[in-house]
Length: 128
Image (cartoon, rainbow, N blue to C red):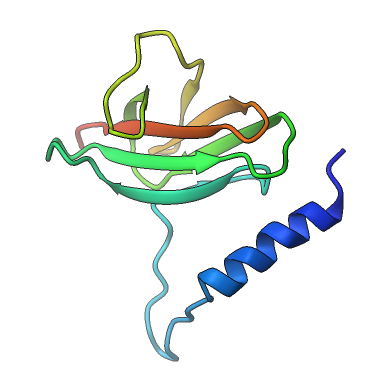
């Protein structure tokens, strides 16, 4: 079991280095492209792939030093998920076990993370 001190330290680090930015009064709130159901994995970045394919690259990691089961949710339909390295190059097929499910048009990906694991995923958007 991970102590609350570790979770507090991670939260304090993000609060200091990436202060929260609110939406001005009357401004429209924007739904996140990618979210997770647990604090056991932190999404570090979300961006379009460098190869201009339209794929979405997601980098996340497990910060608490424990194994974690998390579900990543995309606000868009996901056709496939592949693990990539930090240079957005694919690993050998079968290196990642994910379950992509459809939940009303958006994609959900169930992941099992090792302690302190950094994971880069390529999400191929399903054609509308």
